Length: 324
Image (cartoon, rainbow, N blue to C red):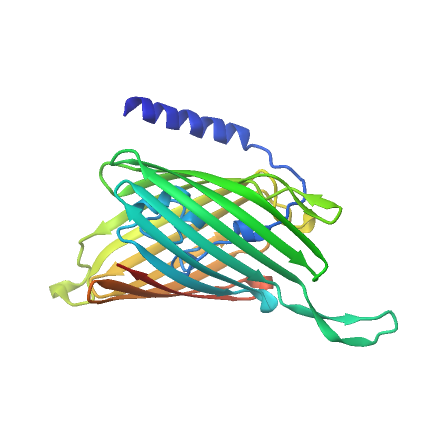
């Protein structure tokens, strides 16, 4: 156990040293950095160190090991100017091994073609259409440490003319401390090849993420005389994202993000969430809620998230999941 901890600390030191400067190279494949699910969406997408979430591989493949049950989920996120991101995923738990499969679809909407003389064509062109396939594996080494990997296939079409595809990978670690209240996470996302549209070649948005989560309140009834709803737990989360290759246009060039989130679980089937995202393009305040109920041996969860998007408009996220 001591050797494992020393190894992890060396990785952390190396990572922080290596990530001091981000490449200014243009990146493509922004779907590779897109977060999934309304639960995380309501918490500022701060979920690198989060637990028990089918969409955990989008944030940290090692988080897949914290699934308490096998299940599947579907999610839809509306973005600015008619953009959307839809996902479907499943997670399978087998003792210390966990497996996941996810598919994501990004649609940037359409635009009308205009000729040089100002004539508007009756044919609309789809701006961008991306598909992401992701296979995930995580293994729990002991009661504290889990490791995980993603293998991702990305396919993209721009303006119905230029297309490209490539593979990418993620690797993550989740360290759950013995008191079961504090988690630490470290992830490297989108290492692999480049993506080439016709003759234009771009690098993928390589980044390094660290995250922590802490259960601030557990089993504490905040209300006098046990008046419901009682609070079972309050979980605080924070992510720091360091881009080695930036995913944003030059005029929005930044190489770091900070995401903060909180989730309050009540003794009733209710969850409420909030978060804040410090982003290069615009900062976001997020809110969310979830409702969990059971039908026989199946646990069903409905979640909603909302993000104020500033200059990019607001975003709505809905998710449905079933665990059995």
